[in-house]
Structure formats: structure tokens, C-alpha cells
Image (cartoon, rainbow, N blue to C red; front, side, top):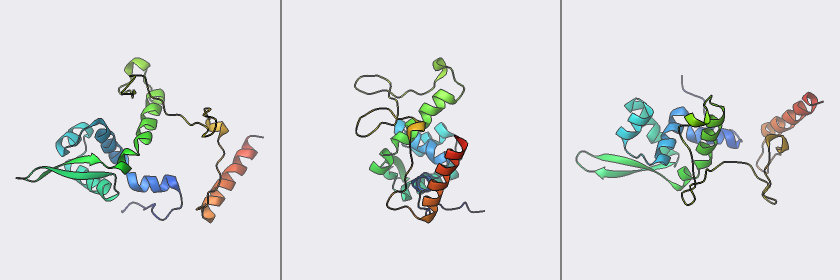
Length: 170
């Protein structure tokens, strides 16, 4: 059965899922961010079967997240590098890693990956901030509004969710 496409949905989360695809794609993006670039290295790191890895690499290339560069001519072999679109996905991976470190059942001494500022070596934390004040914003502080491109379903989803929250929070 072919998986459902989200390309038609007027939703930024669905569109991001359409581009990234699945858990394998996220692991490939993780490894490309780490600096791995060759098929064999990506296969070893992720444990993805070679044919599945090749398929996911083609999908990510088709979505504009990575580019293929030859590094050997006979036989032809390629390495994979993030494009600017792929590099722009770093907050997704940082957020997943940060959440996984905090809620994955690991003690701080067991955290397998840390993100630090290259210049200062201080830990990097992804957080939501108010664009005007710079103040931290929690999930409870966030209100979702329909944007100019919202369709009828997106407007319903937002309004219905807000109504459900109001009733629940009474």
C-alpha cells in the first residue's frame, strides 16, 4: 500500500513531513549534519538496508534537502551533502535531540549527543522566544492563528482546537 501524500494539505507540519518523509530520512539528515557523507557510512550509522537507504537518498535529493557529488569515477560513487534547504532543517533535529535527551529516559550522564556552540563550547538549547521582546515563550503562552494562506480545513482545525481547549480548561 502506497503511503498517503501530504503535498495537497495546507499545513506547514504536513508539508514538512512530505519533505522529510519518515524516521529513516530524519536519521539520514542527522548523519549528514554530523558530517557523514558516503552511502556506506550512512548505512553503517543508521542500520538502514542499502536499497532503502538509496531510495531515501533519492527522495531527499528530489525534495531539495541534499545534493549528490561524485567522489570516484570508476566505478561511479557519490557522497551526499546538505543543500541550504537541508541545512535549514537543523532546528528540527536539534529539537528532537533535545526532547529525546530530556524525555528519553536517559540520565544526564547517559546523554549520547550534545549540541554546543562551536565558538564558546556552551550547550545550545532550542527554545521559543517572542520576536519583539526576546522573552521565552512556553506552550501555554502560544496562540495559533490562521495565516493568510489558511484554507477552510486549517481554519476549522485552529478554531475547533481553541474551542476544545476553552471547554477543557474551564
